[in-house]
Length: 499
Image 1: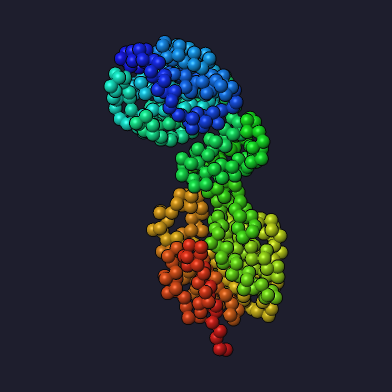
Image 2: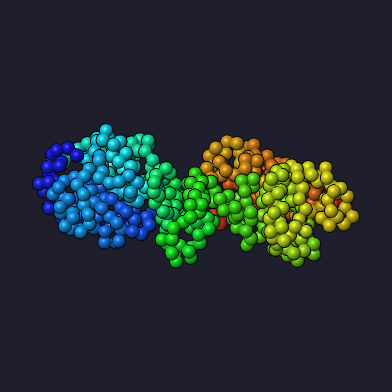
């Protein structure tokens, strides 16, 4: 703060106090306090008129104000009844590792970039490990001197990031707001000082609020719900949060939780973090070895279940089974059905086996390892008889289903990071996008009984290209649209041939 700025606040302290006390910053105070345990020790640096300090003090926090301008310090103490010390952010009159919350609302406006390092060093010094810091500055570039003679420095988000890069602040959340004829950059951060003599506890509420803020900033659409789901997964259920929000989390719980949140902010799919995904009335174990089941694929299951509900013993084949969600869902609904499931990935087959045990269909599901139809050719003699049609010398199925890889090499780079960076490439990539459709359509009729069905899930915009690949040995039965009216499931029937 330069001398003209200091002189203005000293000479016009009451006018300034009256003006600032009418400004509403309740939303930021509420967020700040939600990240702290009740009765935490908070310092309001540059407390000015005492507007924010009074709220902290009245709500039962051990709040203390720091103010450089003597006239403002006197007004603030009279207004709040809270302790106010004369001091400056460049040299805080506070003990090391003594504060749970650092409220620096607008004080850094009067510091040049050259003065920030010392101020941040002081903030870091007095903060405990895991303390919460709030910083608010005006958005812009350079500096301006207003008509009252006050000097203000303006900052961009990238400038602030560069200035704080070498200090122990982490988990930044950036939010912009407008007010007082300016755009403000409001920053929440945590202090990371594991060697500090004291640590600010993390409550259930604080953990949940941090997660909401981080996930929202990472553009996770259902950020509030996912914050709760991941908290549930870490062992704190919603009823616990509501019953006692200020309960302190054990270190192992919040470390687990924040690790999950960080991975989700990096766009790791929620299903992989939770270890399961709902699909067709069941819950399936999923890992990064298998694709995450999608709602669109349920259309395929629904058709098979309805079509074969009165069939005495339908026998089916699932190509590229992955988690087994298709085959297991069908078997769970059709209690008389039998199925063979094939996948080239041994890890995927292991997950499929776990899911079949989980849902009690393991006796009616036989797993084979290999590429598409190859295991039927190479290991036909090893297939248990109950999975084959009587008196057949080769596999004959009532239906074949597949959700094959259908992403082209070119389109792969444009996928959402949740998919591209985490789900198995082997289950996604298909050359020009049609490779697996060609292979399946060329061979499927050899493994179907007369009038047997072939059902294939289609990728977005692929119906026209796939339709040209359908051989004459199949007739189109139905093209099922998903909820967005996109052609999603192709249903074909094997054409009868005259013997």
